[in-house]
Image (cartoon, rainbow, N blue to C red; front, side, top):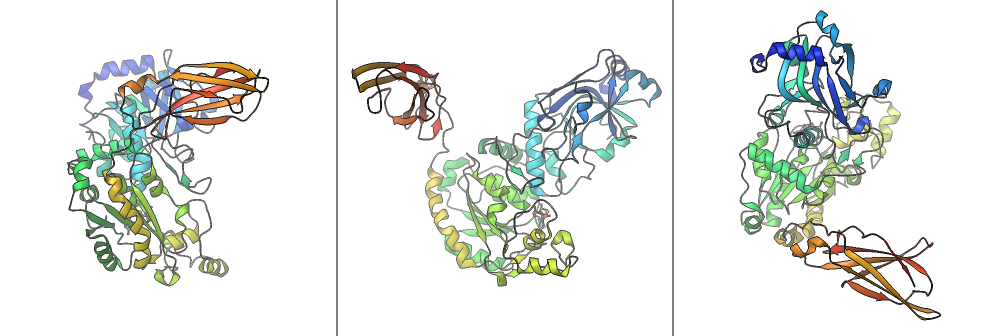
Length: 544
Ligand code: UDP
C-alpha cells in the first residue's frame, strides 16, 4: 500500500512548503455538529497520538470558527448515526512552526473521504449507515470521484462486507490501523470529513425507542439509483426493466434464510407451501452459503422475498419494483415496533409491497435462555427477572441495544404456521399483478398557478359573490397529466379557519358563505393526479 500513496505524484518538497506556509484550511457546511461535513486542505493525522491535527499558520482558516464550542459536544458526527457520542470528530491544534520538531509528514495525494463505519459486520448497518451515505456524500462533492480514497476511522478490521465498500471507488479503502504503516504524521492534501445523513430512514433507538426517522428525506428513486450503480459494478444485469418483468413468466419466490440463529424451523415445508400456493419456483439464499453478489443477482429478479426479521432484509433494496417483502417476526415481538425494512419498502417510489407476519403461537417457538446474553440468553439474570420475561407475551418498548427481554425473544427460532402466513399474503400477492403493470408514478409537481385574480360584487345587503380565476402553471403545457385540479382556500380576514374547495376549472364564482363588505384571503394551488401538490400562489386579498 505504501507504494500506492506514491509520493512521486506530488512534489514532496512543495507540499511540505505549502503545509508550513498555509497550514490547515477548513470550510464546512451545516449549522450543527449533526449536519456538518467539512472540507480540508492539509488536515493531518498523528498515528502516534491517534488524533487529527490542524496546523495554524498566518493563512490558515477554520469555518465555522466555534472557539471552545467545537467541543460541545464535537465539530461533527463521523458516522451517519445522529449524535452518537462514540462517533464524534474533532482535531487538536498546533502552530505550523511545530512541524520543524515533528516527524516528516507523509502526504496523501488522493482526495479523501474520512468517516466512521457504524457496524460493518451487520448488513443493515453496512447499507443504511455507510454505503448509501458514502455514495451520496461522494455525489455531493464532485472531486470525490471514482479515484477518491475512503478512510475508515472507527477502528474495526475490514469486517464481513469489505468487498461492498470497495465498490464505491477504484482505490482500496484504508482502515485506521493501516495508517500507522505510512508513518507517524500523515497529511491529507484534500479531504472531506463526515457523511451526509440525507439517505438514512431509521433511528436505532439510542435515545427513544427505535423507529423511522422523523423527517425522511430520501425516496425510492435515490435508493434505486444507488442499487443500480452497485449492480452495475457487480456486473449484474436485470432482465430488461419493468415492462418485460411484468410479462416475465419465470417468476420466483426467494426465502432469505438465516442458518446460525433466529431460524425458520420448518423451512422446507414453508418453501413447498409457498411454491404451491403462488405457482412459482421458490429458492433459498443465505449469507452463510452464497456470496453477496450472487444473492443480489437472485433477489434482483424475485417477485416475493420472505425472511425472518434481520439485517439480511436490507437486501430488499435490490428487489424489482412491484415485488412483495414478507417479514416474519418471532413470538412476542410486535412488528410495528421494529420497522427498518417496512420503512424501506414503503418509501415513496420504492414501489414494493410489504407484509409482516408474526408468530402468535408460543408452542411454535424455541428459545435459548442458556445462551450468552448477546444471543438472547437470560440465565445470567435474577430468577425473578427471568420469570418475568418468560411470562410476558410481548416485549414492551425499549431502548437499544442490550434489553435482555428483546434479545431473548428476537433470537427465538420459529415453526411458521403456514395457513396463517398464506392467509396474510394472499390479498397482497393478488393485487401485485395489477400494480406491476402500472408505470412508476410520476413525481413532477405542478408549478404555481399564474396571474391569480379575484372580482367581487355585492348583490344585496346579505348577498355577495367572489369570483376567483387563474392561469395554468407554466410547466403544465409541457406535460401529459392524467388529471389536473385546483384547490382554493378562502379565509375571512381575522378568522382562523378556512374553507377548502377542489375545482376542475380555472375560475369559479363563490356565493355561498360570502358576505358583503368583508375581506377574504384566497389561496390557489394546482394538483396533478390527486396527490401531487403544487405551491400556493401569492395570497389574494379580496374585498366584497
Ligand atoms: N446473520 C446471518 N445468518 C444468521 C445470523 C446472522 O446471515 O443466522 C447475519 C445478519 O444478516 C447480519 C449479521 O449476521 O448481517 C448480524 O446478525 P444479528 O443477528 O446480530 O443482527 P440482526 O440481523 O438482528 O440485525
